[in-house]
Length: 189
Image (cartoon, rainbow, N blue to C red; front, side, top):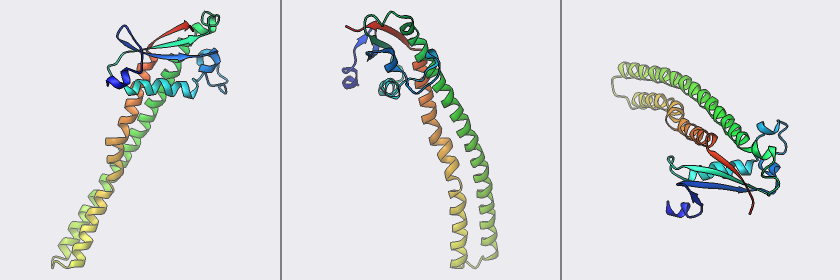
């Protein structure tokens, strides 16, 4: 981790995420019609902040430093930047929470369907095996095919519940962390 840490300045044990702007509007999405304090961050700024946080272990502490031209850094709009950034990432956190609930609900339904289909396939396999106990090759192939199809029906729920939910939780935690970070507005040097 020494390599990545060497690319960032540190102060008070925190990694500094520094963004240098020539105007306040650079930080926000110019197509967003929302009021200033509710505006969506510029995609590049958001990705820079999120990617920086993701590059470090989860226990790493950060502080965001916004560098603005001297006359702009003290204006009222500049003082609203921290709350605007916090609001943006709180919203992103809520979106991830909703995405998690939807994916989890879908996972439960696919699990119910998959288990039902697996049970039907296993019962059908037993029936085929019982009626064709002569060990016919065709009966054995059909019984094994039922078993494979039954387990294949479990692929989607297993994928969702074991693998697709974790990235959503991790991203939500990153957004949560950013939404509470200390943000400082400084004049550019």
